[in-house]
Amino acid sequence: MTISVIEPHGFCAGVTAALKKALSLAATLRDNPSTSLYCLHELVHNEIVVDELKKRGFTFVESLTEVPDGATVLFSAHGVAPQIRETAKVRGIRVVDATCPFVERVHKAAREFAERGLHVVVIGHPGHIEVKGIVGEVGEAVVISNVAAAKEFCAATADAAARLGVVSQTTMNADEVAEIVAALKPSFKVETTAEVCNATKLRQDAVKAFGGDAVLVLGSASSSNTARLCECAPCRAFRAGTMDEVKSLDLSGVTHLGVTSGASTPEEFLKAAVAWLRGERT
Image 1: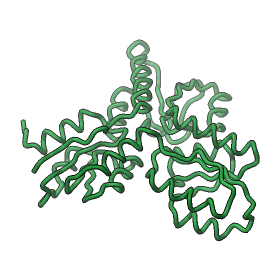
Image 2: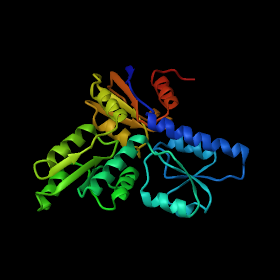
Image 3: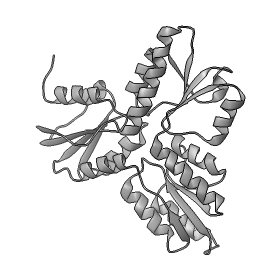
């Protein structure tokens, strides 16, 4: 079996910056062992990264109610709603913000659409942390996750003169985002900044261009960008988030395997997985 590593892959700039902030915070524990560090939600959706940060002293929480007054909390790369920032301020919680700059741009666009009186539509998955933060920015928004939902929204909305301001979760399938926007335009006056981040698009385009007969995407099951890489593969697609999962894959019949990784997957994991697949066992 021939194995090719697909480029680009792995950490994007937003994840790299978020992890740098986390490691910098963790270093403060060495100087002040009494310090407690919290992270609101997983810093990024990858169990290898989260487990390493737990070893370095982080406690991961799903709500600020789990964070003591005056403590230090790291906001994840996915962003948070303004109400959460205000709560932290009122309670004297020190915030270190690791929100991805591209996500911040989406928040800004949604806010500006709302301020101008447009109905905000978020293309994304309703339960995703990033989407919750975007919706929280405007208070009320319609979340559309696929073309079928877009068509249902058009059919159910009587006001054809309504103006929509459309933004997107940054880790969606780039082609699907374009299709959803196209489905909305015949029924509404649409203004849009909807697009996935550049790192997401480049990784998806590289997978689509792969000419082998199977793709292995390394990343967590909870990672949106990892799932989208599997979806856009032009051939069979496998996913693995740990070495145990890599070793349990049934690659029977695969002659040319392309290996890539989600934007929150450590490079060390990819290297270990590729070495094992190539038979470099130690």
